[in-house]
Length: 155
Image 1 (tube, rainbow, N blue to C red):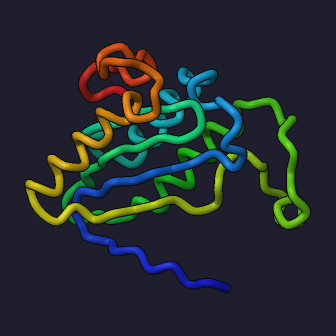
Image 2: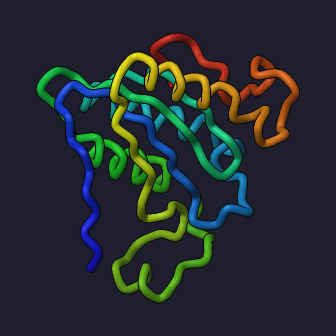
């Protein structure tokens, strides 16, 4: 089995890209309220700061800052994915390997994680999150992408 190395920095800031297993679907934007509820639920139990987030139809980008002394973003992602998936009808195709493990076929198993190194790196990743709907041709202006419009501190 492949061993993935994660850079767990307590109290650190991280950039993530998380994808659906089937990139042709639009489950995230079609079910944005369920995704927001999953984030709220997990943040209530295991706090972290969402510095920026953009939710596109089939993937999302976000920057988180972890609480002092805590670096367990992996547990939070497992729980967010699980909370979101539990509230969707189980009608997606499931591969044999996922069926063996009783897994759903909604999310890619892995995600991209980048440890933010300094203020310049932080600003660059925040900008990347904000510009992403424009980059993908979904809107002409960042402010027009409704799934990313949230109140401060709320996903």
